[in-house]
Image 1 (cartoon, rainbow, N blue to C red):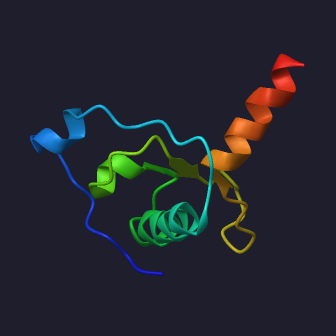
Image 2 (tube, rainbow, N blue to C red):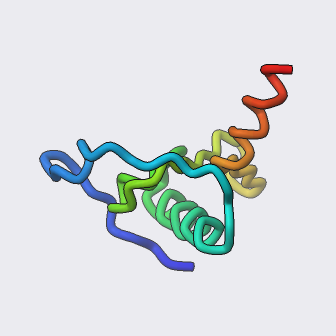
Length: 87
């Protein structure tokens, strides 16, 4: 896992349309782990893959109040949550 550079405006890549991710494999899991490392390093609560230059529709976030008890939510969890809401 590694900390990536977060892109900022006016980087044109941030306006690129990201591809939909339908399955989470080892490549996506590594990406999400890198995104979490990057997000925590920046003291953030959320990060999209496009913000580190990867045009995939993947997000990570952690809105836990306790800094010692991290509870990250990744795209696959959000997708599962959306499926449960539709039932």
